[in-house]
Image 1 (cartoon, rainbow, N blue to C red):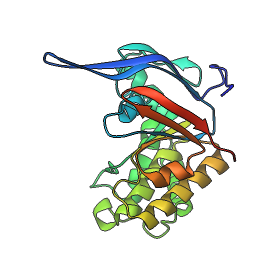
Image 2: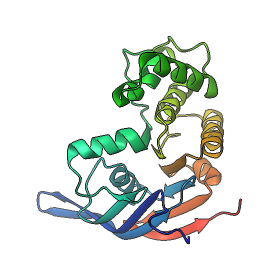
Image 3: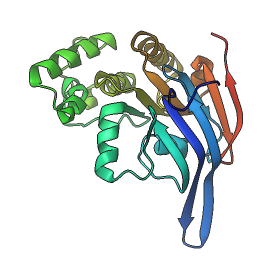
Image 4: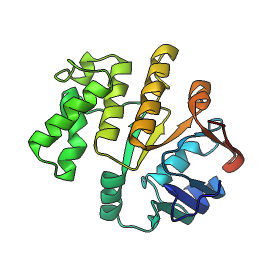
Length: 235
């Protein structure tokens, strides 16, 4: 790996997560240590229950670890308050979910522009950047359509545009191809790969889709909450 923690896009050290459900104690992650370099295209994979979504949620500050540390761009995020975590996500992390999570009453353009509005970007710049982003993801002419008027693949392209337009350092994608047919999934992965190469955005996927694993340049395989294998593919 060879990436120092201060240089890593994401570094986790001895990260553990325990869920308590009544008397039942489930250890979802066990002492995981990883560093992911900037501009990586990495996939966290493994069977259902292996801990991959838990790990992604911890990296994104959507949940707090039981023990261990998480650094995003060198800054520790474990123990931050809700407001600071929300600000960190807003400035540094983009999210893509398998259910798209678009706002149904907003148009494609408004969905893409939404995060920039939260960031305080002015209206004209928001609209210009959102329009350019929709062009980049192959949705020119679809700006006024609401999610319900778009196919699943088009909705996921809107979600990719929304995740990237705010210029995050990292995009976290949780099973982004799960609801798509293989041809649509492949075109989406090619799009994200291009965004990764052109914009140097770090992509981290959680997936059990073989197609995503083929595109990933780094494969981190989890099993029962531990890293089973971690391999970097040749470019």
